[in-house]
Image 1 (tube, rainbow, N blue to C red):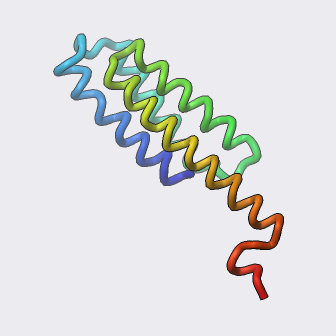
Image 2: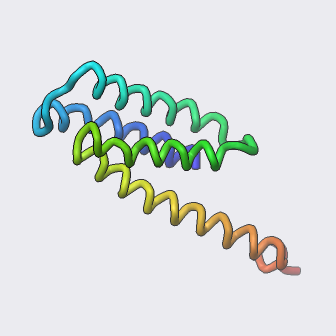
Length: 109
């Protein structure tokens, strides 16, 4: 999850030139929103071991989808990463379920 947040933060920062060129142009608000969100993602990558990490990640995804108010490309990135995070959470649930039932390869003996 930490790696995904780092990659997402980089992609979020890469939306700045898109907003500047194709969107309505960068404003202090749009720049602050994009950079602030990316900083939160970088910081969030370091706290993935905490009990509140998953709710924090979900809030970050909601804030990314709300990027539609900044630029359509930013919102599209938000939708794309919501799909990625939904898959990550599905895999996490599946692995925990298999672990609980003793079906992981390392548990067989």
